[in-house]
Length: 232
Ligand code: C5P
Image 1 (cartoon, rainbow, N blue to C red):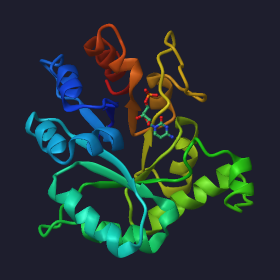
Image 2 (image 1 turned 135 degrees about the horizontal axis):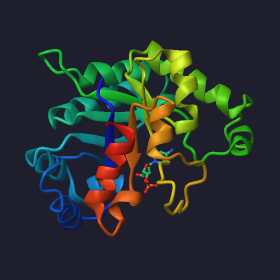
Image 3 (image 1 turned 90 degrees about the vertical axis):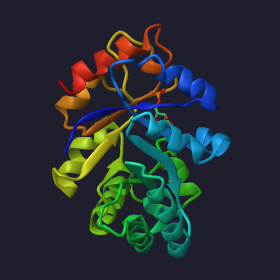
């Protein structure tokens, strides 16, 4: 499976997104489209970015009853995205239904990745609001195992969890890791971060990088630096 750098295109409009992508003349980076951009622009944003030759991780984090998720995944699969995701908390039945919906008549399908526990959820909130008594790392690994059992391809996780996820679910189970910063860069609002080189060392399969590239004075060089540290 290909290690790659995925650029988080956290822009609010197609105009801003294309102005950013226009800077890349020689490369076609793998891009992540999140809820903000998708809800603002609709499916046409996916088709337009795809038509420019980019791979797309559509980050919509589905979570609903199995039948609804299955039908929604069928629509996303028709949009020809390369990777999409859902919440593992939706249960194995939901994840299995999602895979079914995502699989095209010819048997091909986008990669399907699970969100375990959002990094914005603390252990304290889990205990008090969600009545989940297990420690965070136990819960995250349990959700990852459920995702693997349901046949999913991997999870979104902190680079610090990637090694343990591979130990629990196998080396071919994909880890997609945000929270990446250059050694000499701004951390911003991220708390637990790793450099692209460190993420490579601990076995992340894909890194998701937003502001270190999108807010850089020269985004193309920042992207190349990520690729050089993580992939080459
Ligand atoms: O700008 P930055 O590199 O922090 O962007 C990281 C991207 O990864 C954002 O799109 C953010 O929503 C996403 N993400 C994250 N932490 C998670 C899950 C997703 O930063 N646990």
